[in-house]
Image 1 (cartoon, rainbow, N blue to C red):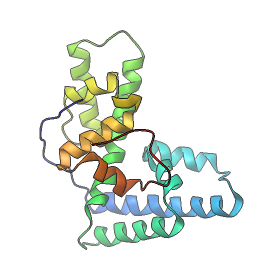
Image 2: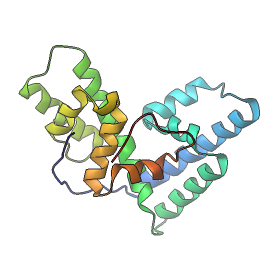
Image 3: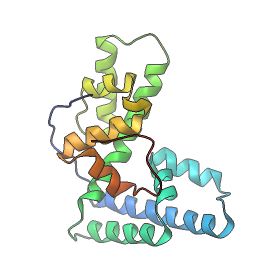
Image 4: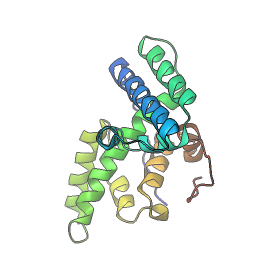
Length: 185
C-alpha cells in the first residue's frame, strides 16, 4: 500500500479540455464502427489514441456511443467556460499520469533494482510527463504494483491527489460492465 504526499491537484486548461473532447469524438466514431461491424479495423487509429491517451481503449470498451458523445459535449462546454464535473479533471490527469507510469515502468524493467538516484531521476521524468509533481513513492509503487496492475497504482495516486476514494474515480471514468479483476479502496 502506497501513500503519497498531498500535492496541489492539477487542472486542465481549455486547450486540454478541447483535446479531450476530440478524443471522445474519435472514440465515438470507433465505437460506432465496432458496434456496426463487431470490430474496429483501424489499428493505427487505436494505437495513436492509446499512445496519446493511455487507458482510452478501456473507455472504448466500457462506454457506449451515447456516453462518449455526452462526454465530448461536456468537455467542449467546459473548454468554453462552463462549469465541469470532476470526472473531466480526473480523466485528463489519469491519461497524463498513466503515460508517466508507463514510461517509468518501462525504465524499471530494463535493469537491476533501481537505486535512490535512479528512482529520483524517474520521479523527475514522471513529473515532466505528468505536468505536476510526482514523488519517488509513486515510482517505488510501480516496481511491484498493487495487484500486479499499474492502473491500480495510478488510480490510488489520483485518489490521494484529489482526496477522493480511488474507487469513486474508477467508477466515474470506467463504469463497470463486468466485475473488475482488482479491488480499489
